[in-house]
Each structure stands twice: as structure tokens, then as C-alpha cells.
Image 1 (tube, rainbow, N blue to C red):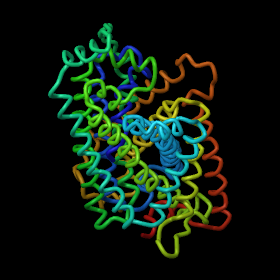
Image 2 (cartoon, helix red, strand yellow; image 1 turned 30 degrees about the horizontal axis):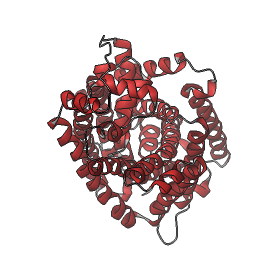
Image 3 (cartoon, rainbow, N blue to C red; image 1 turned 45 degrees about the vertical axis):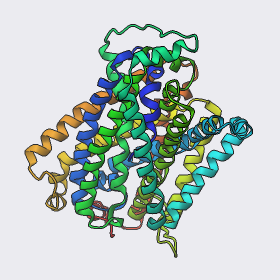
Image 4 (cartoon, rainbow, N blue to C red; image 1 turned 180 degrees about the horizontal axis):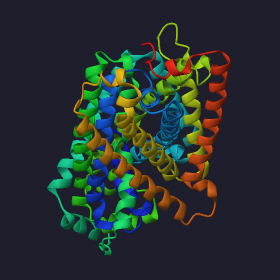
Amino acid sequence: MIGASVYVVPFMIQRNVPGIGPYVLPAFLFAAVPALLAAFAYAILASAMPRAGGSYVYASRGLHPYLGFVASFSQWFGLSIAIGVVSYVIIPFLRDIAMALEFNTLAATLEDRMVRLFASLVILWTFVGVNIRGIKLYELTLIPLMILMFALGAVVIVFGYSTGPGAFAEALSTKGMTLPRGSSEFNPYIFLSASAVLFSSFIGFDSIAQAGGEAKNPGRNLPLAIALAVVIVGAFYFLFAGAVYHAVPWAYIAQEAMKSDVTASGLMSVLLSPGWSVAIVAGAAVALTNDLPAMLLSVSRLMFAWAEDGIFPRQVTRVHPSFHTPHVALILSGIMASLGILGSHFAGDFFLGIDILVTSMLVNFLFMCLAVITLPKRNPSLAAQVTVLRNRTHQRILSGLGIVMLSGFLVIHISKDLSADIDDWYYHSTPIWIIVMLIGSALYQRERKKLAAAGVDQKKLFSTLPPE
């Protein structure tokens, strides 16, 4: 779950939501609340339905087959675009490392737009290959990256809290610069808008649920992994962002964000030696790379689950004869992620992809909370299998709070998107999301008609779990 957003989003939020100013950390903390509530919903549902394609299975069995598809298709689209965005954003970090090491020819090469496009595609398809090869290579890739990322992130945390604005102002003065001043007026709408965007930092735990029966003892380990991810990674994110804002005044961050893309590594480089700056930039690159395997696993298992239920072409259920992984689903997900790379390349702004991701995941998490509420009535036999937070009163309270907060975030996020001062409609995430969901819904209805024509007992199909 530990991803790269913490290196970018808490600082670029100053441009995406102008006026948030010194309230980024409170907004960050507030954004964790609905994510935690959604995590409870995921943990409850995962304990009863440990199958590949987690969110699709949960909502289709606990809520309604179509709503299960909507929730998971929204998730698939948002994460696929995010995979492309991550692959595209890795290259500037590699360029910065080359510049810091004075590999000027390599840095200039990575600056070329076509080189960046090609390199992004190479990185993406390398990790598609890692996922196709299976869990052993996945484990050998992901766990070392996670350890390295914690270690390099700890450099930022320790250094950030051990210094302060005074040292930063002094470092600026040596370059003939002074700290800017900014208004710190609190605006509730801006605060909530920023929280909705920062919410994207906490969504990685949903990838855990998609593994389903591929995990050992999934009924126990999936909920436990979700809980650990939310608590440990949430704390790490908050400490990391807090360290940067402790060392670098928010007014400077806001000023620089308006000029160009800023990152934690770039902001801290004012204070650090070139060697430590390279280490932090490398940490950001590792964090970005670490995002790819888990997200590819997640989106491919969603496609596999649709096809297994017959609401998507059956060819997607094909499993590699040697590696026993859903290679067709992985390749198709890689193709959609490649479109995300191309979109970032031509648009020149990765925040469109983040806005699409936020909309998609808010919808997905909202349906997960609703599924917890409706599961006992719609599917009592599966509800009896729940092993996490079995008390129905507690389930209703937590899921109800999740529904309220996630709905509020969704309304605010859509309002911010539609009111943004952008000329071309296709740079707004909401209409793009709606168009894609309409296309997905048309595919779903076509496949449901095929099931009906084949005489499939759809009531039975969508009330029992897929085979492991």
C-alpha cells in the first residue's frame, strides 16, 4: 500500500486546491477518517468472501450484481489510469537523480518527451511481466522495495523534524531569496475539497482484498493486512508530510507549486547536501515503482472476477499454464494503463488522473459500506461467515458514518471538478468518468443478456461465491 502519493500530493495540493495554505495536515488527517471507515467495511466483507476480485464479489453478493459491477468497474478504471500516471511520473525522478549525480547527458535524454513516453511504457510492461510470473517474483520485488522506501522515507522524517523554518529561511537567504507570505484564513469548503483529494493517499488497502483465495488463510489474513496497512501506512504518511511542512514553510510550498510541479525531495533539497538529496529522490522513485505491482494485481483480479461470473468475455479467465496467473487480464489492464500514460503525455498534467482516481474510489468505497448494511438481508448465509466486528450495531454505525462521509466527499469533489476554470470539457474528471461508466454498463447489460439466453440461473449465480 505504501505509495508515491505522499511525495507529491500533500504539496501539489497547494495548486490543485488554492487557499488550503497551512491546513494541509489537518485536511490530511481528516481524509484518513472515511478511509478508515471504508477499511472496516472491506475487512468485514473480506472475512466472509475471500475471493479474487474482492470489491466486485463483495458488492455483487451483498448489494446488487449491477452495483457490484459499477463499484468495481469504477475502481478498475481509476486504478488503471493511476498505474499509467505513476509510470509516467517515475521518469522525472530518475532524471533528477541523474542531474544530482551530474550525469548530464542521461538527464537531458530523460527530459526528452518521446524518451519519457517510451521509458514509461517499458517500466509499466516490466511490472506486468512481474505479475504474470507470479507471487514468488512479486514477493522478491515488492518487499525489498517496501523496506527501502521506509528507510529512505525515515531520512525525510528525522531530518524534517530536527530542523525548522528558521534554517530554511537562512538557506534561502544564501541564494538571495526571501520567504514569501501568505494568507492563513480558514475556508471550510476549501478544507473539505483538499481532504477529498488527499483521500487518494489512503486507498491502497483495497488492493489487498483483490488477492482473495491466492492468499494463505484469506479469511483471517486479508482483514488483518487491511487493518495493519491503514494504521501503519497512515501514520507513516502523516509523519512524512508533517516533517516536510515542519522544515519548509507552507507559503514557500504554495508559491513553488504555482510555478511548477513540486515534490518532497525537491523542497527538502534546499536544506540537504547533494548526497542526501539523491537519497530522497531515490526514495520517491522507489515509492512510485512500489505502486505498480499491487495496483496491477488489483485491476487484473477485478477483470478475472467479472469474466468468471460471465459478465465479461470468458477469455479473460484464462490462466497462464506455467505461472498460474490471469495473464490475459493482466495484459488487458496493462493496455488500459498504457492509455493512461498516453493521456498524461498529451495532457501534460497528471492531476487529471488523480481526480479520476478519487472519483472512482469514492464511488467504490461508498458501495462497500452499503454492502455491509445490506448483506445480512440479501445474503444471510454469507453474512453468517463474517468474523470481523460481528456485532451488527457496530457494523451499522461504522458503515453509516462511512456512507455519510464518503457521500459528502464525493459531492464536494465533483463540485470542485465541475467548477474548475478549465476550457475543454475532457480535462474535467467527472464527464470522463461518466462516459466510461456508461460504456462499461452497456458491456455489462450485453453479457447479462447472454447469460439469460443461455439459461443460467442468475439468482443462484449472484448469491454464491465463485470457486476458488
